[in-house]
Length: 176
Image 1 (tube, one colour):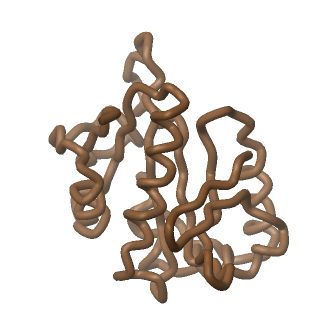
Image 2 (tube, rainbow, N blue to C red):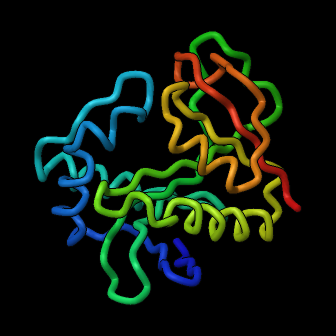
């Protein structure tokens, strides 16, 4: 998987030595509470290592799951993903595999614009490689992620139950 950069950030593949950070990040309810229909916290190093292995297993020219680090000091601050969205049970797949962008950051990194900056870097890369559109699927209560979507210039498409077997607010971004 490729490494992406922005003014302040480096987005790179996850490594096994990131295990303590990932465990700390995803053991926090305030971080994972909006992830998926049934969020759960991570509790062991083994879970974190297995999660890192799954993140690294994505072998695709556009999709990926990146560790977000600060460019100045390589401090880990969060996670950013670009991958196909799981459809809700009973939803017809159709001819298009929808791709979502998502992020979650450590509380110490909240409020610094890192999610927006990291997402911009991934979106620029994905669109330059030919991706036609990207969606963001947000929990209706996740106002912070919805604000990031708006800062990214994403269009709010309304509420949907098409993904993750739960109601979500859907945003869309097309290439400029």
